[in-house]
Image (cartoon, rainbow, N blue to C red; front, side):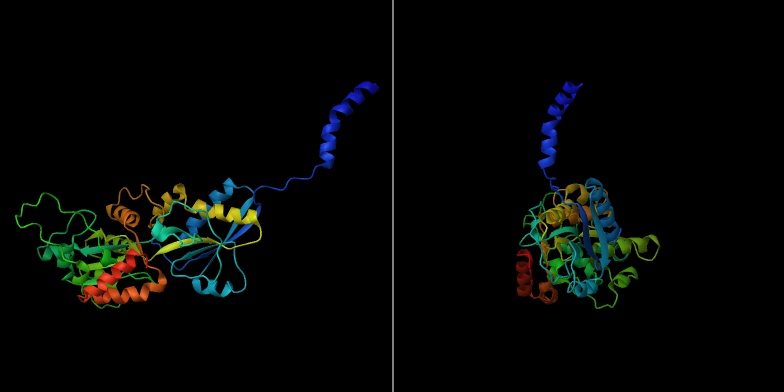
Length: 363
């Protein structure tokens, strides 16, 4: 009876010795709770960003069973106060908010370069944009045809703007620089004029904005014929038209200019595994599979080359222009750009050239 027991002990002894002397291996990935603050000041016009983030967090947690992300929403004013005493692991904030906090570097991602943080410490994960809405009822009454397609040519825009033009934007943002980089389709058909094609007017020098307290209401009440406004306000005018509270209108992409973006950053910490997990979630937000879902918010991906808005020619063109000819206006240059835009609208060519240089350099 002793021999089988001896053989069993000999067979088990290497495992027993290894178990006795070995130490538990530390986990190779972070396990625990991450805190994320989301600053809610920027409105998208579709589903809320908070709801969007909650769904993305749930999907990320499902792929990382031992990681939990606690989301807390607050205004920019609240965040400015709270950041003096505490900080989260991750922070989502609009481009109009400049956090007084250090950010950790993030690995390179396929982001539209104009909107990337200069030292790779933030990812833009949602972009806004501007468009041109034209009251087609006013055009029809005056014998003017509204152009088809994604864009409006400068001569047609100047003709419509003669019946009044206004600008509208989200609080803290400005559409005024947008006409400086106005994009439009090429003319259809060959030019048979022996003198050559007539040059298009520089549209930014041919606009005289109407002063109004509520540009959106002025457009909906047909007090102005043209409204240059944000993607969200395009949605509001569409809803008003469906309720018979706005005239029939055509909408066109204006170009690749925007000053609206929502960013994600990581706050530096002492735990490398925790930092890696935060960076992994930030990278997840700018992955193609997540970015394709941004259309539910009525906004645009921050990564190029995605198939979005296949049934919406204007928004599809807005996204394409953001990818192909992006121009970003940082908040610290907003006042100067607005000043130059207003001078350009008064016919100042020098101001327009200076504004274009600022936009093409990314502010």
